[in-house]
Length: 307
Image (cartoon, rainbow, N blue to C red; front, side, top):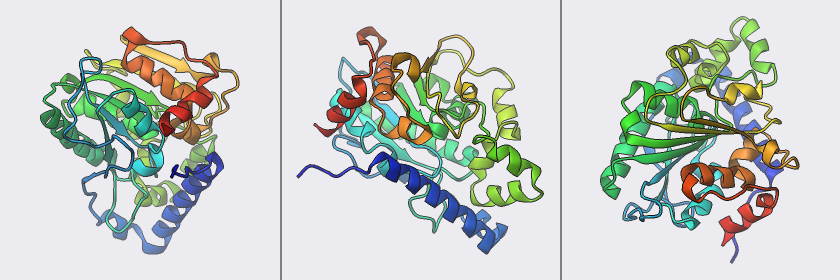
C-alpha cells in the first residue's frame, strides 16, 4: 500500500499549531517548569525507508554518511518524510538525528538551547562515524538544523574536521524576524522571556541575539568545510531571506527561484516537499555528478521519494 503523505497546507498548519500550543504551555506553567526539564538525546527510529540503518556502509560513489537535521518545532518524521527516502534512493547512508527535546513535550523538538543540541549532534556524529567506519560526514539540515545548530557544532564543538559538506535549506544563519513578528516581540516587555521559556532555541535565532553575535563574531565559516545554502524568496520566517546566505570561502548560495521561477515554497515547504531544493542539495553533496536543477524537479523529486 502506498503511504499517505501530509499535504503542504497540513504541514504548515501543524507547525503553527504546535508553536502556539508550546507558547501557551509556557504561559500556563511558568518559567521553572520547562527550564527544569532537561533535554535528552534521542535517536530517530527508521521512519523512512533506508534511513537509520547503522549497518549501512557508504559506497565508493557516496563515501560519506549523510546526517539529516530537522528544524525548530519539527522532528525527523515530519521533516524528512520525503527527504529521507530521496537521499537513500540516491545511494547515501542516511541518518536522522532527533534533537532539542524537552521531557514531557512529545513531537515538538528542536526547541532546547542550541548549545545543548550541539552536544547531541557531536555525540551522534561520533556514533555515525564509528558505525560506518568513516572519518567524515555530510550534513543536510533545514532551518535551525541547516544553520545555527551545525554552525555552532563546527565552530565551537570541534566538528569541523568531521564534516566535509554542510548544506542548509532555509537556514537560520543570521537569525530571522518572522516577517517582523520577532522584532515586535522584542519590543514588548517580557515577551522574549516568555518565548525563551518555551523555546530557548527560538530566542537564540532572533536577529541580533547574543547567540547570533557570538556565532558570527569571527566569520560565517570555518576552514575545510564546504557550505551550500538553499533559500526561497518567499520564506516568511527567516526574514529578510538574505540573512540565510553565508559569506566566505567554499560557500555557494542558491535562490531556488533562480532555478525555477514557479517555485513558491515558503519556509516549511522548501525543507519538507520541495524537489528543487532536494535536487540542488544532491548537487551540493556530489558536485562531480551534478545535473541541472529545473522546475521538473518539483514533481520528479517527490516521485523519487515514493519509489
